[in-house]
Length: 625
Ligand code: ADP
Image 1 (tube, rainbow, N blue to C red):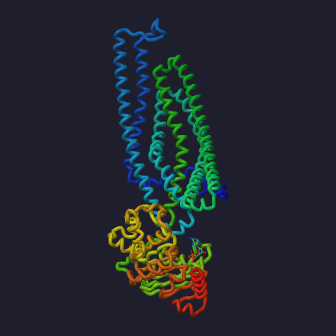
Image 2 (cartoon, rainbow, N blue to C red):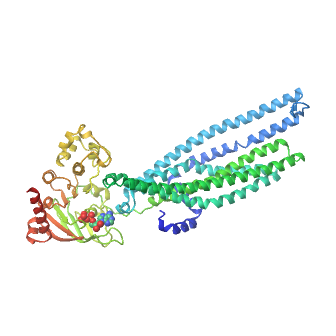
Image 3 (spheres, rainbow, N blue to C red):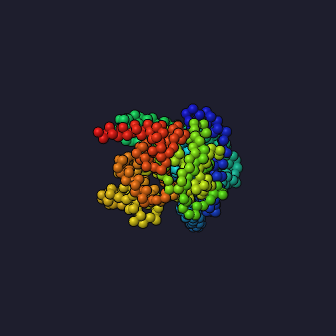
């Protein structure tokens, strides 16, 4: 991604890669996504070539017909220089016309059929390739480590899945085959021209190197701008997706105008870059047209000279003229292709950038499958963790043993590392080698198949997420095969059943994206019900009842205790009251466990926990009073 500060570095890198980049990108696209269509694409190329080759007889037939007419007729004395024919000659002329017409029509019909077949086939292939690309991206995104999402904006990722894939679509659809076709067609026409009259061909073909020069002058410029445009599109997506998600905050601080101004700024920059490319493209085309125009005029001059000397027939001159028109077509397209190819090349590179991301969290070859439900003991052994190589430690030497079925409360100041502890326990982040280990039923969680681990250790995050759909689809997300009865039971346990019954369509009431129609507390209970439905051996609750009142929270805790006996629970909470009855409470401070024990033990210690409990107790009393 072009960072403002790294522009120079980017351009150097860009130039160093040069034209190899396209070949490399294409090879990868071909190797990984076009392989199944190899035969089809070759057939399409043959079809395109045949279609182009069928353009060539036209000028020759017309030239031949003209020469026949000239040979058969005589210049008429009246009628402005037209030809006069004897009846016999007229008969021959009609027969020549019939033959020429039949040839021209046959070529045209065949071309139309081929064009239809090729267009519909490449269209189908490109759609299928896009589906394959999008699903590969989707699969990859689902497997990438959380750290990837911490460091990449959602909008930029979305831009790749939408606009970059779109660019590749049009390239596969029309660009790729057209390129090969144009190259071969150009060579074919050149041969034909030389065969017809080499002196004329020499003049006509002088234009080709001029074309190449013209192209070289503009290509690098267009390529660089294209890259900047892509980066800008990503930036716009990123800004939009962030601000649309945070529209409440934007409104709350009356920042609408400022946001619009920021967006307009970026859109303006995007427009400027686009204009730069449009200007380059326009200049390139203007020069190309001028070169072709001058070439054609030169051919006309020499052609007429050759005709007057009897070295060339009028028909051949006509054929030559028409063929030149067809020669410039592919060359102009080739110059334009350069721009598309550059853009595609960048898109392909950016897609592979995602597809090539390493997937550190993956099953080791020796990963064990969990056949039965684990008992649910958890053991943290000297666990240290940081979010990135140069980041400070967030967890330091955490050791704790949690017996199956225990409820463990985790408390501590904000930023102490509570959420991080749960995230590493759920293996959303992997521990670095030598930074301790976490074991489920005595087995390192890195040695357990990830699918099995995720089924048995479920994290309910702080921010409750609801998907677009219905209450039912949101609950069943955890277990698509759940029966109605099971859905209701989970809702009941999460104290959500009343709410669902009160909704107009019950279980089938719609929930919109981001759960906008639900209150914060309802969304939290929905997330909790989803986790209950998954029925894991270990439930990690990350302050997921923060929006609920103490009474509802207590009811949920009791219900869970009763309905899910023997499940291990780790409960992070900022409310001391939520963990008071836990079997064990861990007090975290700056990434370390500073106290641990039952509520009573901790109160007797009169340390962090006791102080915090007193403070919250005093506050609660004050609120009650
Ligand atoms: P708690 O849950 O106790 O409030 P967290 O575990 O959320 O604490 O955070 C502990 C520390 O880790 C904080 O300093 C926080 O800034 C940092 N942190 C949390 N998440 C990330 C992340 N995704 N990337 C980088 N740092 C993070």
